[in-house]
Each structure stands twice: as C-alpha cells, then as structure tokens.
Amino acid sequence: MRSRKEIKESYKEMKFQIGVYQIRNISNNKIFIGSSTNLAAIWNRQKFQLNYGSHPNSILQKEWNEYGQENFVFEVISEIKQDDDKPMNYQKEIKSLEAMFIEELKPFDDQGFNEKIKK
Image (cartoon, rainbow, N blue to C red; front, side):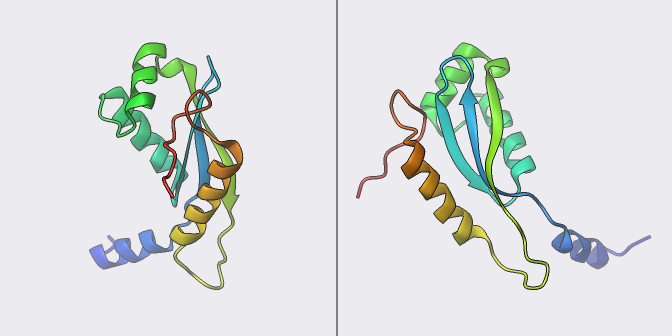
C-alpha cells in the first residue's frame, strides 16, 4: 500500500486539461466564459452549483432554473498544452486567454452571462 506522501506526490504529477470553456444555453445561444486548470472538475463544480441554486452568476442561475440542465452544454474553446520539461503555474496564462475570449466574443447582456469589467 502506498504512503500518504506517495499519493500526494502522484497527484501533483497528474496532468489535467487546462483551458478556457463556455457554458452555452442551446435555446438562445447565450454563453458564459470561464477558465480552469482542471476543465473536468470545473464542469462538475458548475453543474453542482447550478443544480443546487448556489451559482455566483445570478443571471446564469436564473436561466438554468428556467430552461433546465438539458438545455446547456459545456464546451472547451481553447486548451493550453502543458510542457512536461518545465512545470509551471498556468493560472496567469489561462486568465489572459480567458480575457482574450471575453473581449472577442463579448458574452454580455443579450449575448451571454459574463459581467462587463469596469475599467
């Protein structure tokens, strides 16, 4: 049996899908854009929050309640390839990529669920 330390080290070496995603209401094509260092886990988290009425985005929550889970899809729109030779923190890189997609797709108001960032 492996020790707790070995299990922790093994977990640290695991590779997760990193990137930018959108949650899209297929009934009206409104989108929510986000990013994560673990795309599989973030979709589970988002669904959990939405299904229990605790999602921080009240507009997305309202439409989820109105249209139902079956009218929403999770789509990866950009993935960051990990470099095996030099481990790094991808958080800054994915936040920049997320900002680029938000700027390009403008998921605000009638187009989506993101909030405009005040400059």
